[in-house]
Image (cartoon, rainbow, N blue to C red; front, side, top):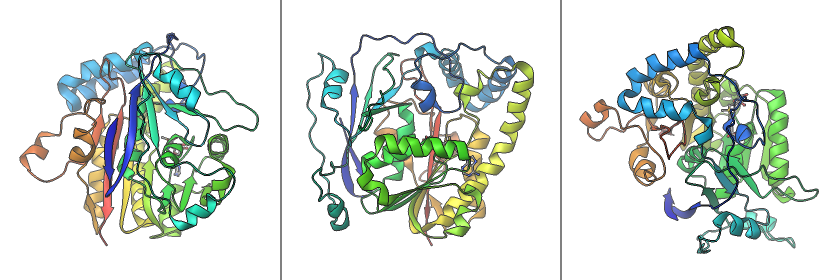
Length: 392
Ligand SMILES: C[S@@+](CC[C@H](N)C(=O)[O-])C[C@H]1O[C@@H](n2cnc3c(N)ncnc32)[C@H](O)[C@@H]1O
């Protein structure tokens, strides 16, 4: 169990291994979201796109050096991918917890310290009191498949499957009870669900520009979150690039989980060379969109508030370069050092890329962000995250 400090308030991230006899068959994803891919029972096997693999080899051996070969071996072998099971604190999970813990893990979970302010207490006043914030993620040391959560009429789903590295942007956001939060690129909703495990925000606005994905997001929220919280959650359908001007300074925390070249799924793009070429063109265009989204997020956050930017690619031009471009062009913002706060605390679970040499030379200057690089036995990621604070 990790004792984790976010902006002065303690909460506990339960981080446990689970036991299960079900094995992962050799699956290859064909979607664009790990969360969705991981929860599929059967997915078609696909071929690696050679054009993209060659491109990755060239770019990532330069950018990642000696850690690229092991990351490459994980990306090419979906049979070894691990995944996390997040418990839904709003559902009945005691049987599930026992199942996840297996025979080998005693139940030693202690309740986290928490507070619920007065307005939230009102929500609590019904016959079903709301549970305290608690983010519990179970992982297995090997690639053991856990089934998709079943749909049961009238019941909330009790768990959500995802790449455990997806929790890091949520932890970096550090949402507190009563915060006004914007999830700018929200579908299918995995990180929104994780946010709602960690706190009771006064408002969580989940925005998604694509109408079909917006519907998917709304369904995810309906399946996991109780009706009694619906007055604090909105789902919107705006272009995130202009959101910041529409609602300038309205939010305490903003998450930009940006559209990116999702290295895991793009490597297995169907459609051969032609599809590969299209992907590479899209990859070259993405940094412009990502920069615009991040600027918009910084406009939406109040002075003193924070924006977390994240992607699931290893590509420097979509990660560090985007953050640098925004830091250099937006006045009144500064970067937070996540190295100590998250990198050191979670290094036993995740393989982080070493900070770039310039960072070490510059002494106290924080690096642009953390990069989780998949590694055999710790196959989480790719995931990049960076936190920017608006000073005025
Ligand atoms: C990486 S996914 C987000 C995953 C999500 N945060 C989660 O945890 O489930 C990025 C999302 O951004 C959406 N998107 C792309 N362009 C956008 C824009 N201009 N404004 C808002 N959302 C956008 C995509 O449709 C996609 O659903």
